[in-house]
Amino acid sequence: MLIFNSPSNPSGAAYSRAELKALAAVLLRHPDVLVLSDDMYEHIVYDGFEFTTMAEVEPALYERVLTMNGVSKAYAMTGWRIGYAGGPTRIVKTMAKLQSQTTSNPCSISQAAAVAALNGPQDFIAKRARAFQERRDLVVRLLNEAEGISCPLPDGAFYVYPSIAGLIGKSTPDGKRIETDLDFSTYLLEQESVAAVHGEAFGLSPHFRVSYATSSDILREACTRIQRACASLR
Image (cartoon, rainbow, N blue to C red; front, top):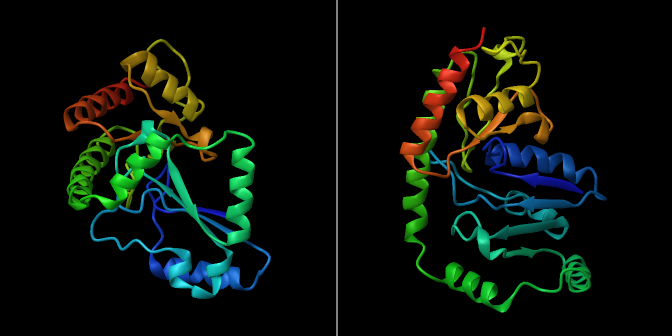
């Protein structure tokens, strides 16, 4: 099974229709490979990016694609712990059987709330996406102004995943050497009280993840502290 997340966590990268089509062409040559499509961030995209799915761009894969989604991100309902999936009947029935014997079922209140979110007014989603885009632009600009950090511009989600390759090998004011992205994330936490996730946790170093799902004022303050921390390295 190919597990596919676009737009993605942790980088915010998203696959275009053309890229999905090229990937689908490879999958067509391997009929035993199923696809798990994680569409959780489908509504949080920027700069006119067109969200598409694997089954949409290549209908021949329809019976091999299991799509998962939820209300945590687009509808800001993380605490309700509710998601949903659609796919081949044999797979979905087996999923239901497994869940009923392990975690039981999601509570009825969360189910009702999710239905209300999905069937209710949707106009706020675009407004929230515009707000996220402004925060993305702010964070990318400020992080790229930090010494030794290179931050690409993501197409979706609400994360940035900058490289700190330019900081590896430097030392903190108290003489600790920055050997890894974990060292850097620990330094940010201890030196400036800024919480970030080190890239090794996602399998790609030397990077770190910053979420911009908070206010612009908090993000501006956090990025200022990151700039200060970077400037203090020698």
